[in-house]
Image (cartoon, rainbow, N blue to C red):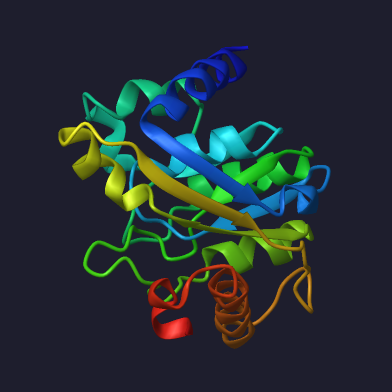
Length: 206
C-alpha cells in the first residue's frame, strides 16, 4: 500500500516540474519481467513510477541508505540494496526471489549513472545473470531528459522528459550460462536499450 500511495503522490506532483512524453507503453507485459534501463539521474525512479502500472522493485546502491534526501523514499519503495564494486550475493538472492515470485525487478545494467556525457557505459553482467537464472523476459527502457531536472528546478523551469518502452525479449539461454555468454548477453541488453535512445545517448553502444 505504501508503494502505490507514493506512486499516486508522484503522479500528481511530477507533472508540475516535468513535461512527460512516453511511447511504447503497450509493450509492457504482465509480470514477471526484468525492467532494464539506462541511468541518468535520481529522477529516473519517479519517471519509471509514472510509466509502469506494476509495482517495480528496483536495485539501489547501499551507499544511499543514509542519504537524507533519497533514503526515506527508497526505504518506502522497498528497494533491493546492493553493494557496488563487489559480488553482493544477498542482493542477487533477493532479486531472484522478486522475479521467481512473479514480480518486476528494475535494474540499470551499467550499475551506476552516466555523469559526464550521459551516454551509455559498459554494462555489468548482473542483469543478464538475473534474466537467465530466473528465465524471465527483459523489457528495455530508454530515458532522457531526467538529467536536466535538477538544473531546471533551480531555474524554475519544467523539464521535458522522454521515456520509451521497447518490445520484451528473452536471452538465447536460461539457467546456468558461462561468463563469456553473460558478457555477450549484457551487450545485447544494452544494444536493445540503445535502440530506444537518441544517438547522443547511445555511447559505446551507438
